[in-house]
Length: 231
Image (cartoon, rainbow, N blue to C red; front, side, top):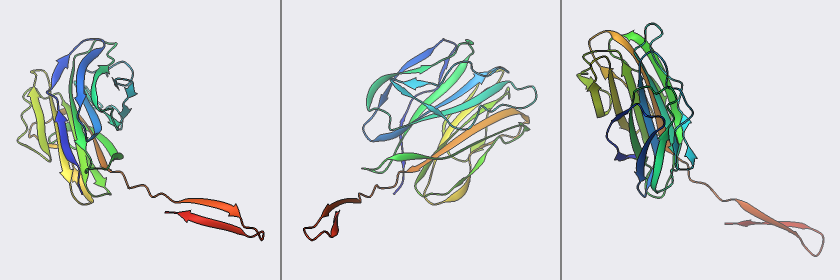
């Protein structure tokens, strides 16, 4: 069985410190992802984002071009977010302008999600992308690009668009994809203008069912040891 997409919040731009928003996790949503783009050559300053009392984990590292970067990308995730409404907090001690999207994924009914793989890439070139080897079925993946392109308008992407925005001095894109079978999956954008960029992507698969194999041992009257499997 496969994952499906959950609630997607609209892209937000803010220079607050911290940046906060009320996020609602719906029943059945098993992974929560925050994708961030920080404008400028300096990375976002501050700790990991939080959702209520839960702290996000970082997928891969911050990605931006090695030479003259104009923006950087981050991706953070939370497995088993608490259902209901809580405050998303994104520390931003450098008061940078940050664009972000929050999106949830759903494991099959009765199941859970687990982290599978993440990766990042950066360059100054056309077609920003990263490819990940997905070694499990029923995967949901997310990717974010931070670009210095002043006319960011990709003609295509490998997944489903969440948003693509040109902010004049730079651009950003957010997308997700669903993959039924193990595969090498590209997670990028088709964009014919060469410019600086950084991409981060992460994939999540279904958590394997847990088998219960407990044993209870006791001494029989004749001194023999007996073990009974509890099914």
